[in-house]
Structures are given as structure tokens and as C-alpha cells.
Image (cartoon, rainbow, N blue to C red):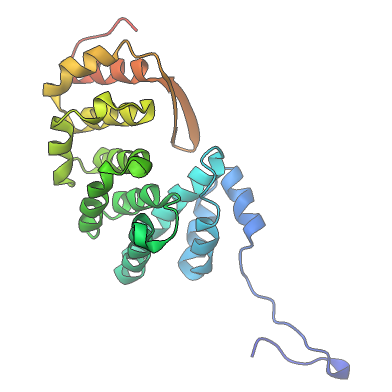
Length: 237
């Protein structure tokens, strides 16, 4: 029952090998995710601790926590998809108004889960994509689409139709425009080159997370890179 008794009846607590939140923060701070992943496979409470750290989008550690949740889910799903599906359903519930909760980083976390187990959770990706019309969720949904399409451009069938409507290449939110351009690049949508060419003059600054750090750039810089990749032409920027 967690320990015996010492002299005088003093309770002796059995030492437990549980990773503390402070240690998780330290590992996220150094972008050393592997120990967190390994610990979470044995102790699911670590996933809850990571979820509690994902809400500050200005903090790079929040994004690293989101990334870690996806990696952990991918490894757990290899032997127990039910655990990850239950987690995904919880995040999907957070997206719905009737949940009474703010969505937080649920779209981004769902994107990482699908990215790391695309075959097992393709249906989750399709449901997530359907939330693109919700303005409050759009950044997260577009990021999730980008992250999944980077790895499996064939997976989210709704994405092709969504991009062909060109809705989000002209979105009022520059971050959404940037993700839309990157999605066009990962899907190889050459028909969108005329719109992407116009965005090569869009100097609005954007910042997004990738591979452990924030990338500070502009819509124009992203559009130039994607334009060059799709057209096969070098750009002058």
C-alpha cells in the first residue's frame, strides 16, 4: 500500500519514479523530448501535465509540449489505439460549443496526433478539417492540415477541395494565409500559382513553430519559396 512503517510507527513512503512538472518544463526548455516520451509511455499522468502546458501560444515550451503529445500518442498507438482515440475524442469535444470549454490548443494537438498515426486516425483528421469555418479555430485547423499534409498529403480528402476554393489564401489573418500557402506547396497545387504569385508581395510578418523553435518570416517569403517549388522557377527574393 505504498510503503511500510519505521520505528515508532512512522509511515515510510515508497519512493516513486514519477517525472515532475518542473522536470518536464526543464526538458521542454532544452528541447529534449525523448525522456518525456519514454516516461509518458509508462505514466499517462505525464500527458495530463503536458496538456496543462499548451495554452500560452507565445511560449515556445507550449509548442514543444504540443509536439511531444503528438509523438507520445504515435508511440502509444502502436500498441493501444484506444488510449489515443479517447484522448482525441476529448480534444474534439473541446472544439464544440456545447462543451462549455475554450478550444485551447485542441486543433494543434489533434493535428500532431494524426500526423504521428495517420492511418489509425485519418477519420479524426477529416472531422478536424470540418471545423475550418470557425474563425476562432481557423489558425489551429490550418496548422493541423499543414502538419498532416507534410507527412501524408493524400490523407485529408477535404483539403484539396478546400484549397481549390482559394478561401484562405486571401484570408484576413496573415497566419492563416501563410499556412494556406504552405499547404498548397505540400499538396503540389500548381493551379494556385497565380494566387501564390500575388502573395509574393505580401510583406505581413508571421511567426510559427517548427522543429523546436519559432520561425519569424513574412507571407511573401513563404510564398516565394512555395512558388519556386511549384513552378520550378527561381525567385529573386
